Length: 500
Image 1 (cartoon, rainbow, N blue to C red):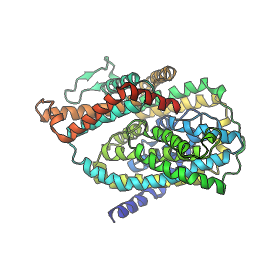
Image 2 (image 1 turned 60 degrees about the horizontal axis):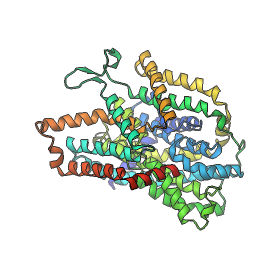
Image 3 (image 1 turned 180 degrees about the vertical axis):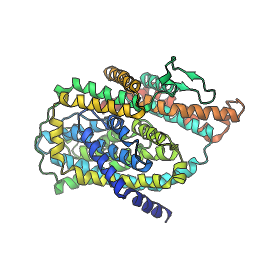
Image 4 (image 1 turned 135 degrees about the horizontal axis):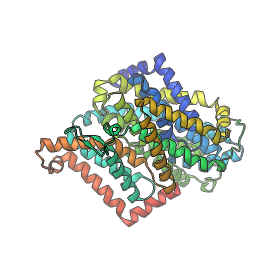
């Protein structure tokens, strides 16, 4: 009964006129920017984040969640119509979705993606409502040592799950930790790593970092790829799946939802791994595996369901533990900190309207996606067809205005431009920057918990290994790191990412 009453409270919060309006706006803007080739959820949220600063906390997070769902859907649209995925988890969708579009079945592919995402979103929202409160109760027993060990585990997992070289992922983690240390030391009030620049005394603004690395970096990289995109479908028809399509997609949707719900909780790239895993699973279970890669509708339904389920359940560690499982959740935590909310288990007890309102808005946002976006397919196709060199000056101007509005500082705009160059360099070097953003968000919190633990233990570091829970978390982190270093495991990991 408690869960039902809490969900009813959440629906009451999420269904207010203001929150419904901002959720709808978030879904629309997220999709509108997400359909631009190459701009995934991280870049979209980074660019639109300043829009939420003047809103109440519940409304801001509901709008950001709507932007997230919209950008996810936009990524699948470009993957199907242009063969340019907006994010790693949409790569698999492009394999069969684009082939369906070439065969004249773009409408069925797009509707399958939308329906699978809605069903997966509905089920995973219920799972969040069931398991998040229990996890939050357990997390209330955590002390500083346990939180430090948990964040170490999260960073190690992000290294394991990151695409590309392990050494590069480890370097990104260290870079993020160092950037997080810039500013004034909380305890001693001594500036560190500021290089006598007064504007750095409060540290690097995470909006500046995220918008530069993921926003400007992606925009500049997409200018190079403009000639590669061709919209082969100018008019999308026959949106509803046939009876035979329904027979083929029900199983993949169910299996993809189950797989994504579990893997989405994992720190790092859980949603992307779920998408790859779902595709491999459906290909192995199929009686006609040779159809995959040539326009199999199951290759759209399974990965899209897994992707959306993983995106939803990634909110669980963020809401209950304050631990971002991916770079989007790191942005959400940054937004909570800007709103004066300390992420973690206390959110559910101290601000239940925010907690349950956000959960209820997840289902509402997915319903809006289904109802709003299928009729607007024609609009998205026309947006994709706009030459990118006409769009990018407007996008960059909006980014600059958004960053300037945070602190009314031109220094932030210049810093964003600098990080944009860095982000573009990462793209050219094929370095995955997501671990850096996770470390940048978690670094200051890790330092605080480390100091607090050592203060309580009078400087004795063995306290991390004498407390059972923190010792267990550190042991799991060490095992993960050792396993992924083994040649056989490392080879399998590289093959998995190459297959995706």
